[in-house]
Structures are given as structure tokens and as C-alpha cells.
Image 1 (cartoon, rainbow over the protein chains, first blue to last red):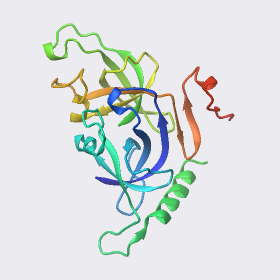
Image 2: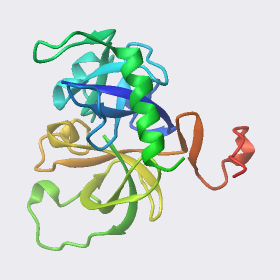
Image 3: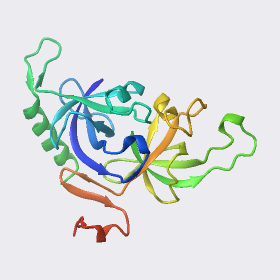
Amino acid sequence: MYLGRVIGRVVATRRIAGLAGEKLLIVLPLDETGEGVMESVVACDVVDSGLGDVVHVCDGREATYALRERFVPVDATIVGHVEEFAHDGSPAVDAAAAARRNKRRRNAGNGK
Amino acid sequence: MYIGKVVGTVVSSIKDPKVASLTLQIVQELDEHNRPRGKYVVAVDTVGAGQGDLVLFAQGSSARQTTATDGRPIDAAIFAVIDSWDVEGRLVYQKEGLEVLGASPAED
């Protein structure tokens, strides 16, 4: 599993039957300090996540275990919301503040 | 799962019987801003995606979890055709012909 920030949503009406009704969100994975470092992924969502939320994502075939229908080709699912996180003995980081910082830095980096 | 664009098909006449009946597509990986990542995969198409369609695909053992790919030696499967997506509240992509369905396309 890894941490991530929800940055978007995907609409796809033509899809495998077992995935009917499942919400698909775009997640930017975060490292242990809250920096976005990896490529964004599309993940199913079972905990009613929204734009800007810091979440934890289960990847691999295990991601299907959170879904109503388990026989579906899903390799990433958002399984929880993160309020704060800490690493290497440093003070806990507020997840919402980390998400806002990450968004600002990323927008600055994209020149937008 | 990743966003990808169907950019080609694969014709293969000598293959394992377990993959003989499957449709293989060449899928170019895209980032969240609809830009190519410079990578592609060969994926089994389970939803009838066509050339140029933007799709979602799954990789690894998850890709076997469809009736078309169950128990077969494949590791990437297209499972949805994308209508639209947005990032940070801004519409990034909308499929042609879907504008009439109500969602307003971005003006810029």
C-alpha cells in the first residue's frame, strides 16, 4: 500500500460488467514526506473519497478484495483516508496541510 | 490502473492456444494531463475498444480477472473506455460526440 492525493476523477460508461457503479479516481502517489514522486494512477474508491483527500491505496490483485464484485481486473483501490502521518521519528504531518503544499508545489512546477 | 490510448493492433499467427482467441491492442500510456509517458504495453481488449480510444487498463494478476482472460497467460487487460476525466476540477479530456450528453467541455 502507499499514500496518495486524489487529483481527479474518470468517467467511463463502457466498462466490464462487474465494475458497474464503482467510482474511479486519479491518485498521485506520495512519498513518506508527502511529496508527489511517482506517476499518477487510476484507482477504484470504496471510502467516498473526494478531490484533495490524502488516502491510502492498496495495489495488486488484493485491490479487488475491497470491492463488491471481486472477479474484476482492478489493480488499485483506495481503501482509507489519512488524517496524519509521520516517518523516521519526525513529528506527525497533518495530511490535509501536506496535500495543500503538494498541490501548490505541483502547480508551480507545471507553470500553471 | 493507468490511462492509455489504443494506437495499434497486433497480428500474431503462432501463439499459445490459451491466447489464440484474444484481441491484442498496443496501448500507449498517458499521464493525467493527456500526455504520452513514452511507454506502451500490449493488452488484451475485453470491452471492444477501437483505434484511437482512450481506455483504462489493469496490469499484473488482476488482468486475469475477466471471463476472457481467466486462467490465461496475460498480464495486461483493457477493461473500460473513457468518456472523460478531470484533474483538480478542470476537464482534461472528453470523448468526441459526448458533448451533447450535458457535460460542458472546457472553453480554454
